[in-house]
Image 1: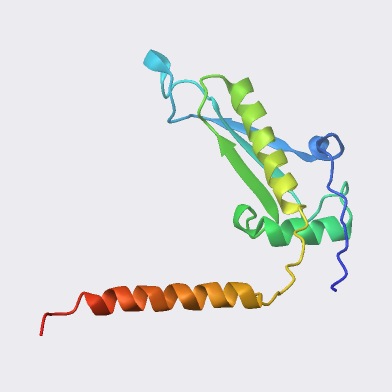
Image 2: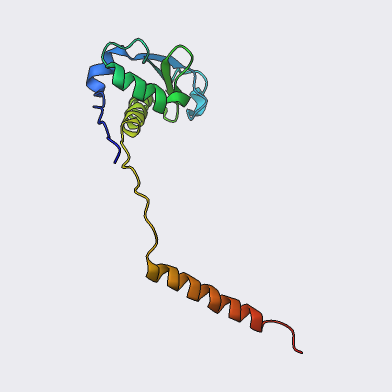
Length: 141
């Protein structure tokens, strides 16, 4: 049985001071003031140079979140669905939290099993029954 090593997930409170937020013009909802207010929020977190996580966590994050990490080792997430910059900021933080939770789930290794004799017999019986049914569909002599 393979040895499963558990890696502690970093807490948001520990890494939150390393986040860099930028606001830009959003293409989302906004009514008459659309494209005039900076409501889109982009979160950048430098995983490669983070001092709040250890090496095991860094490796796990870079492997599991490879699609969200750029060449400089930064996680970049955006949110622009709300009209409020604060709501978009909260949404992008919750997105990161969900990604980190997903990255640190350790899946149980699957054990290979053989089918029982009874299940093999049921399968073969069902196949024969179906074969007979299809033979009876043939043309009349």
